[in-house]
Image (cartoon, rainbow, N blue to C red):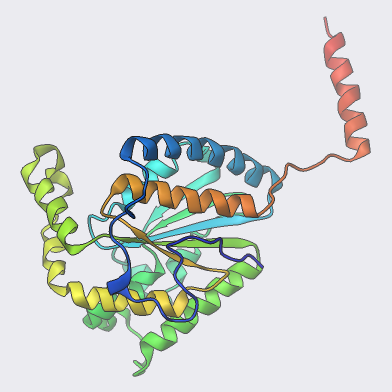
Length: 289
């Protein structure tokens, strides 16, 4: 079964992750912005080749999960990192407030419907983790889920369900990479203000996002628990510094490329009979007038 590739931002599997120690900024020796952009461009080209082999081999599915506080840069990171991937082999789904139909099912149902096929890369912009993040911060949302009973240890039960779900997927060939884009409260404030002060960004502003800042500490506690409870070798979390968008995008892309390379992807080899048939057909095509 797949095991996580190494990274400075890999969340440990022993429950020792602490939010207050997780970096928001790039390290001091990180490449400058121009170098990051050049490196990102090269990685995107490399990912494109790897994605072609992934599609042709048709054995693995890749699931990329992005979670973050508002304005951390999920949309921009997905757009930048996946810009070179063949759209035919990539699927992006954004999950907002659940619909009435979704609330009539278990909390994993709506995302399970969107899991990627073998040979494809699936991207979840938010995910089933909202059920142990925003719902945990606002437990009143549970009342709308029409659960038959509400156990005292509901969060522990949901973590267990998520771990079981992800292990099942991993056993069946889905490679799961989960990214927590770790933006600081200060940087989030600056990005919200930019949305207010820049007319071209006004459309991004949502009053509810600002109100959620009042629950910052609660969210950090919820994220810490979620990452500790569900980061596993076969379904790792990476807590990536997000105050620098260029560094964040480069880090995410590097982890994805390293993971794809670790799979030893290869194009299918044709049998001797298939090669003979192909040669015969090629000869026929060349002889056409």
